[in-house]
Length: 237
Ligand SMILES: [Zn+2]
Image 1 (spheres, rainbow, N blue to C red):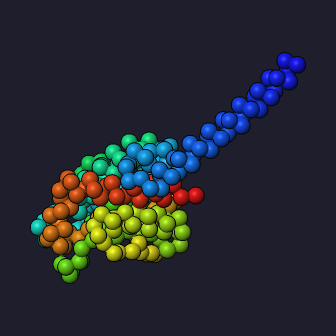
Image 2: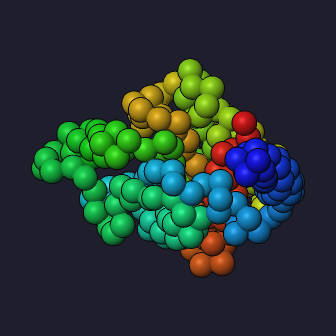
Image 3: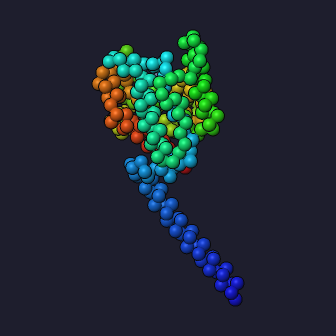
């Protein structure tokens, strides 16, 4: 008698537990898809390994803006802010660099650049990272061009989805209409062993945007947009 009672009690508890879990999941998914608060995304990015590659550094300044802002400084500032957000979300971040250095060792600049890029890829591979986010800032002869844009390798559907997700958030921030663009020639996108995206934060050749890219407020907004794009991407089945 006692034994039968225990079995039926356990079964009833299991059913109740199942219903409760189902309800919690439904609410969480509902919140996750509609919310804009970074905290809501925490449970989605948690436990993942994300590589954040602050483009250029050290001997390589990257693009130089018309007001002499250096790409390497902007990419590092935004990367650090992105790192803080991703870490708050519970994920592990691997920073390719967290100061003004490059990863090359040779004296010759061309060889050094090649070493630098290869090291970045190796770092991500060794960390068994799930995602590689490369942060850059653009330059172009026409000073009127502005806006943030993402790139992915055309042969990687996963990278494309991630790039589109980040682009959507960047467009929402900047009122932009740019689309994520496939590319076969960007070295890190070609060589990465995981889903990889390059984010061009904006144009250093546009005086207004160059200035904007140096402000902590805008850098934080860009980092938040990238983080949200990442979280929305992970929330999709
Ligand atoms: Zn660059």
